[in-house]
Length: 232
Image (tube, rainbow, N blue to C red; front, side, top):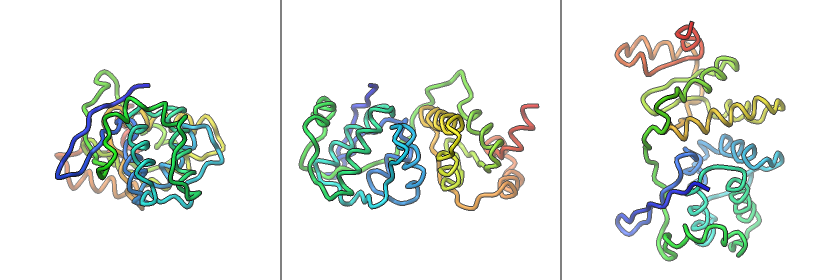
């Protein structure tokens, strides 16, 4: 599994480096802000292929030091079925009031755990990553799907603003083809360095107004309809 091993100390806090593929889900798993909860739950459900998984009752504040260290170690790896299932195992443990993690699970991440100290506070820190896919258009799959689903999307720099609750509902669609396409599109954005940001109540009209108010940033804002017209 692909792993990120960098980390740093700042003012007595330890900032483990998460793989960019997790995007804002890493912050949700570390701090549970609720901004990304439905989206994180849907992504883990699809990645792990556990359709009944849910995060109801999970509170990141209830992570024991041992669980938090292991969570950081897992998040240093690329999102995949294996890492998603290991994260869901930790989440279930927290929901059940457990504080320990299994030796078997820990053994899969021994190398990464070696660089994460035991007696310091671990803090998630969002970090912009360099675009890793310079020869492709990583926004296109999500924008095309958003057009099909009538989801408004506003893109400014590396931030992709979208109503995450509505996106999560589509990620839980009974249509497995749609679920898989959305998952791949989202991971592609994450890998390319984009960050999905929650924008509740965003409308197509608001996206058009943003484009008109900031013509110098016209290239940075899109709605599905605008994007579709530009490709014809």
